[in-house]
Image 1 (cartoon, rainbow, N blue to C red):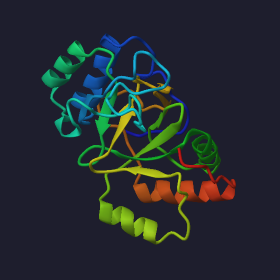
Image 2 (cartoon, helix red, strand yellow):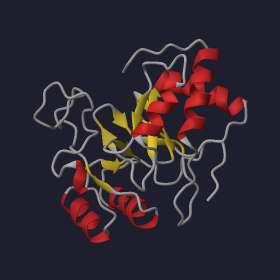
Image 3 (cartoon, rainbow, N blue to C red):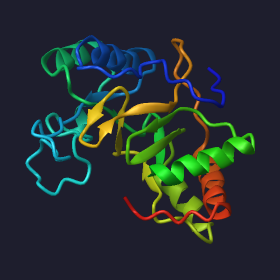
Image 4 (tube, rainbow, N blue to C red):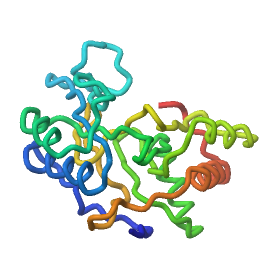
Length: 221
């Protein structure tokens, strides 16, 4: 499936209180796109931007696996239905790598400027996941060796970039995490095939160039 530039937020992106919306999205990811998913830990119901896990210093509140752990991620429809039937408001966590997409993420303000610069150059991007603090550009699976060679060849890589490869994860729309809504900044087009995503080399080259040209040196978040 081809992905085109522009914002398409209608698919699997509406906010709600869980239930059919979240389970429907999780089933689409798992069974139609073959992306392994699992439920994440909820944000602290008392608010204050805290995580529902036991770690008071959690750095990704409400946006990570807990019980079950990441290795439980699956594309099995029965397991997905069981999880979200019992935990209807749980965030949807994608286990990146393997046969699933990986991701490159950066702080939201820098990401918005970088994507605007890339759009002006006609750079083709696939889906982009946005949270209030960080945006994640989905890319084709890559190995740590491939990533290491790519970064080694760069004179400069912004410290605010993060790489979500094998053994990593990101939260998918329409999850609700401690910082707020997870949504599509650039949504996949509707259809049964797994969405098209670019190579990691193209994204890193373009993002580093865009951040350098726009003078963005975003702090780590």
